[in-house]
Image (cartoon, rainbow, N blue to C red; front, side, top):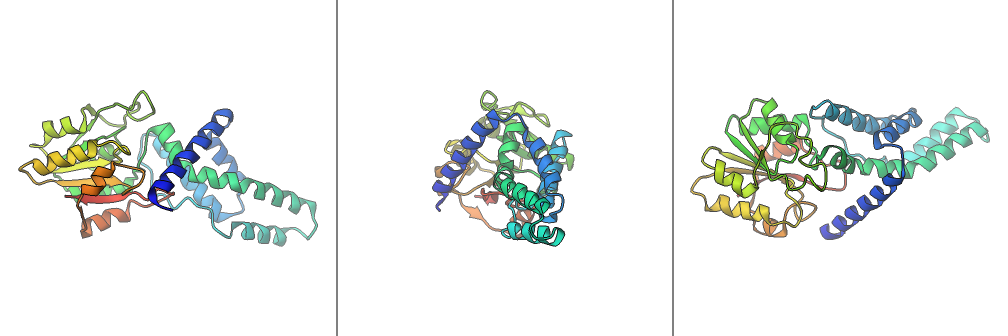
Length: 286
C-alpha cells in the first residue's frame, strides 16, 4: 500500500468512526475503561489500555503524557483467550462459552478503538502529533539553551514541553483552525497569533532553532517557510516532525526538503515512536 492509499484509508476510517461515535452515547474513555475490566485477565491487552487511559489522565491535568507502545492487539490474542478459558473452565462449561463469546465479539471493536486513539487526541485535545514528556525532554537537550521559534504550534504541546524544560521558546500559530476543530482552542501554554511566515519574519534574528510539527497535509505553508529559511543569511537548525509523503506537510515540501541524518536526530527518534498506522518521525531539514 503506497502512502496516498494509506492516507485515504485513514481518512475514511476516521470518517466512519466519527459517524459511529456521533450515534453512540458512550465516550471513548468510558469505553476503554470498560474494556480494561472486560480484559482484566489478559496482561498484554491491559498494558495497551492502561497506556491509553494514563495518557488521557495526564493530558486532562495539563501534563504531557509518557511514551506509548504500539497500540495493536497481539496477533495471537484469540489463541491466548481460548487457552486461558480452557485452563479455567471444563470443556462444555457454559460459563467458559459465555466468556469466549463475549471476548471474541469485543475484539474487532477494541482493535478499532486502539487504532483510533490519535483521533480521540485530535478531537478532545487538538493534539495531532503525540508529544510525550520524554520526547520534550530529549528535544530540550538537543536545543540546549538556544532560543527557539515554534511555528504552527496548535495548542502548544511542544512549546509547553520545552518551557517546562527551561528553554526559551517563541510559540506561534495562525489559529486558522479554531473554527474547524480543537486546534488552538485550548492552549496549554502562551501562543502568539502569527502565521509561520510572519513568525519567521518577526523572530528569525532572535532564534537559532525552528520547530515545525505536523504542518497541514497539502498546504504549501511549509514550503514557503523553508524557502524563507534558505534565503536568510543565518543558519538555523530546522526541526520538523511529520510523516514523509504521508499524512502531513505538502508534497512540495517533501520534494524539496534535504533531510539530514545525525546522531542527535537518531536519539530524538528514540523518544518519538510510532503507535499507530501513521509513521511520523523527527527530521532535521536543510
